[in-house]
Image 1 (cartoon, rainbow, N blue to C red):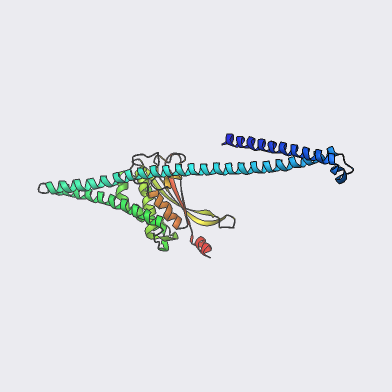
Image 2 (tube, rainbow, N blue to C red):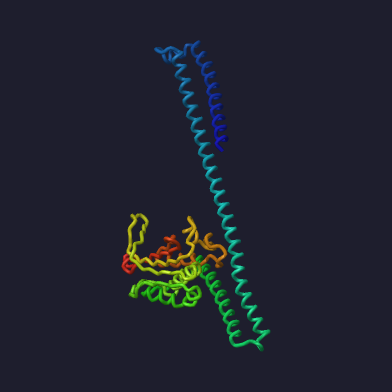
Length: 345
């Protein structure tokens, strides 16, 4: 591109010099004629003809130089605009390719996540059908429990797909009400008691207290279950999961106004797993994306994306970071009632 620009610059310079040379020759002929006819002595009686001729030539060269420079600058700006356009097209092409690869990986992952529990449902149903006369009650219970668990996995996957489609279409409805967040944490822990027991995990909840926030009980319960499910999945056996509540601030900037801080409540969910790969603390909240530190752990890569969208709908903010010596922490900042009334006012 720069080589092309330099070639155009030389072309304009050559054209300018050529035109200037032609004008100089023409002016020289005209001045010679005028001198012989003694026109210039009448027009400019006190100046020698040669000085007048040089002045005229300099003016003409200046005008031609200005026109040539203007044309060159115009050509250079057009070339720069073309270069920026090419860069934007290349970036759009790369983004489209990344999106295509991400969706292909998502479809492959979803098909696997759908097939696995469905295969389990069909297999245990077939075993029960073929062996029902010889099954003991314990075996029958095991088959039905496996069918139930696989069906629950399918239902959770379908719910995630429906939720993300509603969020993208702007059709997810929220019903906000004053809610005790400590009670919601206790409920989420109670619902996950069996999963915690399977890995012999201990869980530490904040001290009993009434902490009221303006929340959609159903949607924010989904946030807590998703974060707790992730913590259980990536925690080692006999590990520890910790819930913490603390006051904090959310920094906001309205259009045409300086940044200001509003009071908030910080909710943290921490585990002792492998943590988050450096540089992926934002990427893991994107749709159809999973962290590279935990390959092959299953899932569709929609859970954290749903968490982020629901928290954003509550006027909050979510982030993830590694904790020392190991593990990850997911922190949610939610505006308190005073911050909400200030914003609405």
